[in-house]
Image (cartoon, rainbow, N blue to C red):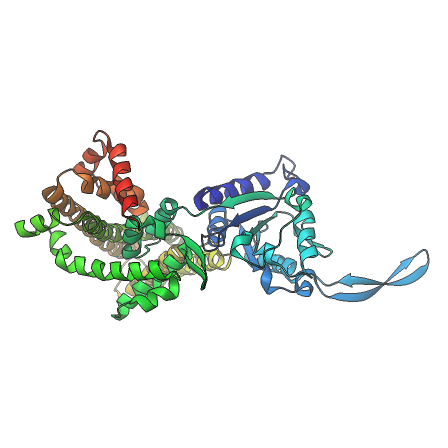
Length: 520
């Protein structure tokens, strides 16, 4: 199965394992809660999805790569203790708590999360001395004499033997006690993730034309040559940073991430063309609604793969704009929720103020009380933010959004401290006006993003009509998280009209077949 389906399978397993009956007991008893064993090629996202799952399920996550552990750190160190049996004292060997098990208790203590996932990566690459302990761990959910706490699920990941010489096979007894999920690379699923994570559009457009280059693993006389999803994502990150620094990425840099000589060379060549297309086709002018007849003729007569790249360039410009818009919308929504709580606090703190319809002037200390309400809201929101952050429950974008809200609340506090506030209604009106100004700016940005989309449609219609290029553009819009959210708010008539055209699915498949034919 693909990584998206595997992720959902693990989430469903977590939901089932953590379901409790009317007495607070787990419906599936601990002995029947099989560890999940995730097997698949390296670099396809097995490890990465665990953080996503923990955040989305709102549970803890403790992650270890077992290849970094010795037998002593995994099961604990031995020590001699004294015990009495039948009136006689004996020396016996006991073990200190496993580093891995103790880290679960530490996680519970620091985050307050009593349930979670213990993720063990590269589990089938353990050393000879640690192998028996790993078998015991999968079969009995223990390290040495210490059990994994109740409510903590075991998920393990490993690579098939063809990808790693250190892999050892588990016996039937062990495999019969795990829930095995085999994962295969799938570009369509990865693209959905890549668009949401803002992977560089040059990477996505290249892989759309060359989907066979998404994942390659070949053994040659010179060793392994490979291209993986992890490599493409890391390359994308470096590519965006290079652009920020004004540097150009060449073939040598690409090959540091895509360790398949032919694919790296091909992408480096494509990247040069990608940059050239942005200039040749005057994309900034096109998205402002300005394009000449000469440009339309050049576009219409361009080779198919060049036209595909152009459509991706137009789409990526729109997608980046939509993503920024949706993220700002989500930030303003979070800020709005905090301002509602702030207003309630000010009403409770200053019941005689005009916030409740009373026109009497605030007494001299009302300004400081209004500021104190804002400061308290900042402190409370910051406390909740830090708690979620420590528990690992925030994605990078959610973390950024919370920081932005804190900054805007602090700006409200600074504004009140410097203003000549007369009463509570005045204090709230100033805060509300500051928010409304931010919302007005966002509304203007929303309208501009919509105009950009309309201009993209104008150009594609003028150059290609409702042909396969339009189908490709619509297909990309339909596959992207941010585009879908934007188009739920922005009613674009042409988008809905083209979606309803007859045989849209068949035409999409026809284009995909042509793209596959271009794969070298």
